[in-house]
Length: 135
Image (cartoon, rainbow, N blue to C red; front, side, top):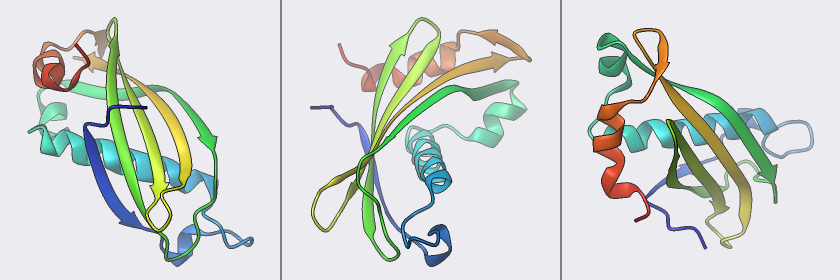
């Protein structure tokens, strides 16, 4: 069982569904990205301000496993856990359908920082994320 450090409730909109009436796979990336951005805001970090300071967190790799489809109108909970490996931060993200608690998506998102356009460790992230990391 994952120790989640952040969660966000959202609702599926009609236009996010495909002809089969289920959420198109590409929209799950939007859901998990929005969750990461909201987590950063909750942790006191602004994407725009980071960029202005020459710090650009970027996605290096994403792995997504689709478990059960979401449909138009479904309310879901996007949950996030965090790990660190070297200079990478790994966001472990799960999406659960609220009505029945069923797992819809399991994702792993590896991120790195470009500082001044170069791959580097990020002391600001190290300090900000320290309380959220497993001991």
